[in-house]
Length: 308
Image (cartoon, rainbow, N blue to C red; front, side, top):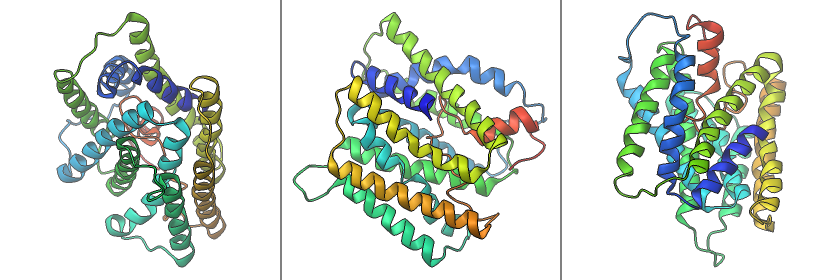
């Protein structure tokens, strides 16, 4: 999570000088050699034609939008506020699992989700005189897209090759952000271009560390570690951007984290093996710079023959 927070801090640093779509384009472009080496490990025969084109298209669109929204939000908002809003992703996964996966959600989880969404409202603080910015809306929409992408991935299960699920968002992302360069482009200095490359390296490094964590540790223990990003956000925000946590962000984030931890505790104590929206969630936006760790794991360790 510290690596991911460093990844997001560099996004914010570059976002002060360049359009967020330009930062996303170059970091995605520079990640292609690294991602290609991973994709070459996929030995399962087949093509890039999806078995379920509709679901793959929906997942690809959501993965693209979650990346675009996250890069923009990190560029214009304090780190802690972005994380507080993105922490709602596992809660949204719980809600979306009902219509998409047909899962049943009990009273306790409904209560936890309701409290968590109240925490989001506390962070956004509508009607208090502080106008909602596009950054807040982007972070919220990014959380919705990230949750949708995660639920669709679970619905697809092993019916699609990991290569298909990784490549289509990558190609769409480059097409979208590349076309945006014609609208707003600022020539990048060489040190800043190197920082864009570091975004790619850090995103993939964080993904590998997540794979190792989930392979060697208990998921119910590893999953809550995502909330430690608030600590990293506070440290980076204080020393680099002179950001200070305000009271509504602290209260709202605490409510969201508490509700997420409660759901994890309920799932663990009741042993819901097939109904674990929070434990199975990866909070990171599924982009080229931070591809889904479960898909990377299937390619590197399962060679496409199994999934979890």
